[in-house]
Image (cartoon, rainbow, N blue to C red; front, side, top):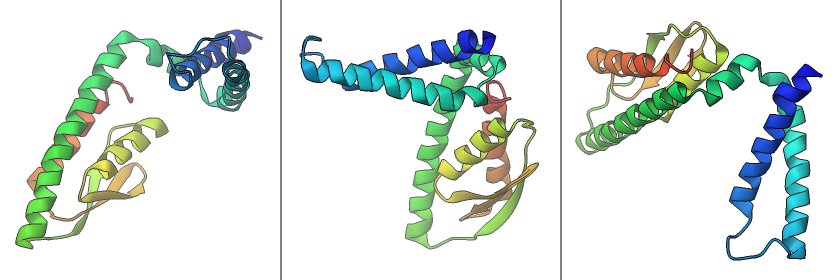
Length: 168
């Protein structure tokens, strides 16, 4: 019963609010039959998703989600990802034009303990152009187009430094 009150109901309401924001046009009134049907479908879908995901969400993850400090860390991490994306796009374009490609599979050590942290870290690396995470265990194995030991270490440390604050 506690889990129902702490996780299920807030999750259903949050998902329903997101549904409303994403699906209801601002210029139509809520008296329309199609919008009322949309609200019913949205509420039922929100309940279903909350039931399915309720077992994966813990009190700690809810605390982390609504902690404003974690939002600041997440925004900083997203800025780092965008920065590395831009630099990587330019580097990949330069490699294509010049033809200087030295592919390699590199072992990247990670200090993340949770599966969520490891998967977000590996996804961040995979999103970066010219790299893809091949294997994700205690260490990551990453295929990169141009192996330069200093660059790969710097990017890995950058992701880990800013990511460990909210991924844990």
